[in-house]
Image 1 (cartoon, helix red, strand yellow):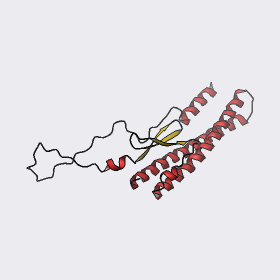
Image 2: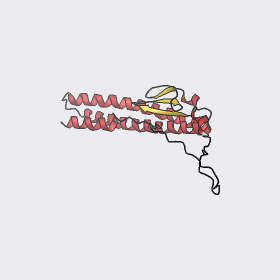
Image 3: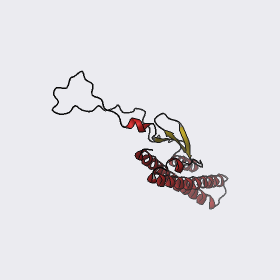
Image 4: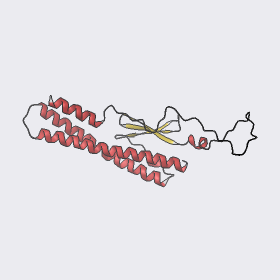
Length: 182
């Protein structure tokens, strides 16, 4: 009974089933019309006031990501092509993609470092946790099983924290790339 409760807590703490959709908006904002100039009381009501949207030219080149189950797709534009996938043990040359912006390049390097470290340590932690659970399930009255379980859970937590930092850096890298204008 205690083992089941511990496993349920461990699984919920690891974030299984929680998929974040970063930087996506299913309801895009409507374009904003420019207000009429004060003092221009003779403006005809039939004349349509429009402004050129300066983001239209760069919107097709902007990068974004959508995350799902341990990975993220790098996408160009609102409905553009998937340029690559990053995530656990996935190799995509993000640095080459954002190299036009020095700040984006630095954030991309941070992402790759944190993502790799987090992936390795989380995988080792999950393996250690599983071994600890198997040892505990075999009813062997061994002091190593709680150490393995606690150590494995700690390693998973540490690894997921670094993966989270990595995705924050990925978001910043894409932001800096888009701010520079691609």
